[in-house]
Image (cartoon, rainbow, N blue to C red; front, side, top):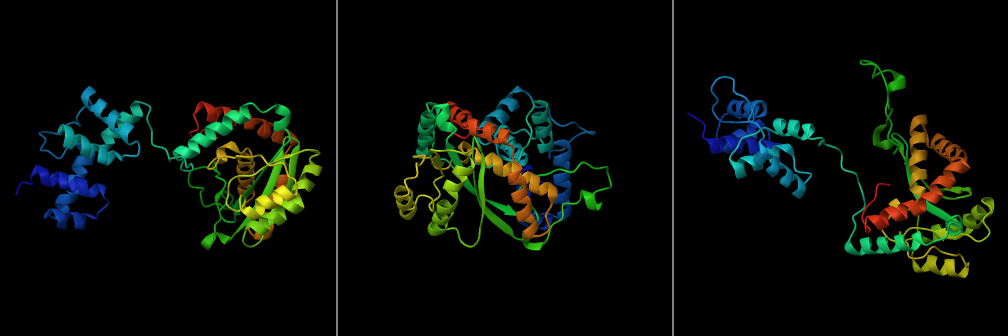
Length: 337
């Protein structure tokens, strides 16, 4: 019996949803071999219709091109298979996802892993834009007095840092080319650190739960000592809007201690804080060393932290205004930091 066109496209649609051939066959009411043959034909020729001779995949003309670009604008994450189904449903033209991929690549459009960024509400965007304007008017001498602070987690097996290995084909299992892992990740450590234009401050490993009292203990025993180490007389303390940072208990402590706080830090703004570049740098360096125990992990973190050159601190501290300018130009939206 000749398979109807509507059943052929039911098969293609079901295949996009990652069903097994057996399940698709059951849903459509055909054999598993028919499902397999239909999918293979669509992937190879871009059509499920009868073809005389060997046939060729249909050409993507200006009408189809406009349709593809319009759908991509509406949803850049739309899969190629779903794009092919949309083209058939709307234009009644059968094109395979491989043909669409080839067309994208020819027009310098490629698939990338989406960049992860915090969700921004309208209020977040407004606050980020306002903060950027304030920072742009700050004198450079005030920027140099800011102590940037944050916490970060470092994992053991694997590290958060991304690394690549350059090797010859067939040598992937050589010990030096492996990224050695253990089940359940092997543990992690949380650290608090700070830096300014004048260098790095103290680095503190956090044991147990990081709540407001624990945070106050870190600030009270390390912030002024870090300022002294960096030779800053009248520092400005920067912290993000994590709830434990902005609790009533912490605010009361900062006021009593007469600590000059960088006020109105916008929420959801790690891209504004230069210390994020420090954490990335350290995680890459740690990943290169591949520590095999928590003790070794801590030792390497401290070693890398203490070897950060002053020139890097100056570069990252002064990038604060560059970040603010980028956010201002983006009208509060995400920036490439």
